[in-house]
Amino acid sequence: MRSIGEKPHAVFVPYPTQGHINPLLQLAELLHYRGFHITFVNTEINHERVLKSSGPNTVDHLPDFRFETIPDGLPPSATRDVPTLCESTSKNCLEPFRKLLDKLNDSDVPPVTCIFFDIPMSFSLTAAEEIGVPGVGVWTASVCGFMAYLQYPQLDDRGLTVAKGVNYLSEKYKHTPIDWVPGLKDIRLKDMINFDRLGDTRDFMVKFTYEQAKRCFNASAIVFNTFEALEHDVLEALKSQLPPIYNIGPLHLLCKNVIKDGSSLVDSNLWKQDEACIEWLDSKEPNSVIYVNFGSITVMSPESLAEFAWGLANSNQYFLWVIRPDLVGGDDTEALPPKFLTETKGRGLIVSWCSQEEVLNHSSVGGFLSHTGWNSTVESVCGGVPMICWPLFAEQRMNCRFACTAWGMGLEMETEVKREEVERLVRDILEGEKGSEMKKRALDWKRKAEEAISIGGSSFLDLEKLQKEVLFSNRK
View 1 (cartoon, one colour):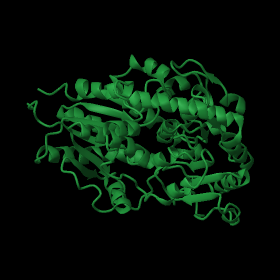
View 2 (cartoon, helix red, strand yellow):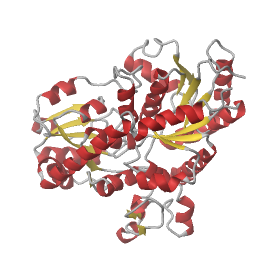
View 3 (cartoon, one colour):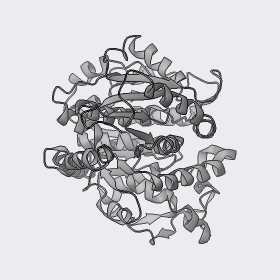
View 4 (cartoon, one colour):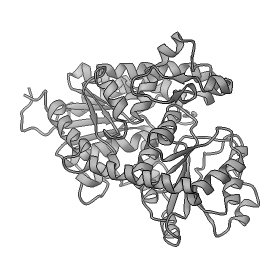
């Protein structure tokens, strides 16, 4: 039996990609600031990547915020694409995690009192149940995306299976209205969750994501990285189906508000950030730069990269473009057209990674060309920056649809990249009347996000409720 005065100990288990690590680390920092002992569990290979990008001492300076590792079940040389990782972690991580919990509870740190698990890592919930502590699911994507994941059986029952792949459907079929899902308005079949680009592993991912979403119905609570006003209708529709829901987002903004010095405890980047881009942005006029970043796991063909390049070049606008070392698939790792850099000299800056939050809050950035992953979408909302949406994977199409319709701050781009469309959309967002209207709406959403994380705001209050109702509820 635990003493009330004993320090609570929260263990965090993120899915091992950058877009999942960041929000769980932000939530961990919030609870650490509120007096929790934290253990943050990375996979062994990602832990090594953090040390390489941020320095060997980046994770060992706080006695009550510690990092531990478990293997992901794959050999170091294996390809860690999403389906492979999902299959391996679900089959191989439970036993190492059990051993880690035993080690923690036998050590000089406070006993584990709760486990926060990234929902694709639901083996952690099994371990929480075994040791009798709350298992809190953290959904790092959108709530509208979560609702869409839950529709797989109904889609099949209605003959609208997405397992076949939206890209293989006729235009007419893609636009079939999906008007029977509570909380989702003006949705088309093409906006539902899909894994078109995964080939033979598509069916596995459809089954895996649905099963993981359903598994969290057994969690003690679910944390969403969103705020009430942004996804109100779908949140209301889900409340009667799920365990207690806590909307504690945008997490990066709430961190800044609660942790007053605004500092991060640890750099969790898997790539080294380029610091020069902020100085470059400082030299540009307000709202004059299009920022281009397709996230941490998107892979594209050399042909698509070239179309983006010439679209940006032909727009005659300033651009800051993040091109990861592993962005381009195939053998051609230097796929930028030879004349592109010459023709855009002085107008463009290309970096391998950057502080996206800092970039999106820079006054010179007037638009964001994005894959509409949820972290990127939320950070764009918080920066008051309208988006050009190029969704490819999982719930990104749903995020795109909400950005373009419900929130009025996005322009949708076709999956097949054409330089003419890139040029037109970049001009529209930076120069056109449409872009000006979208900027106003984006700034309005920024204001609503800031209200949510302020004292007395919906997200601030939900953090208080989570701590009181779930994390301390089983302490005797």
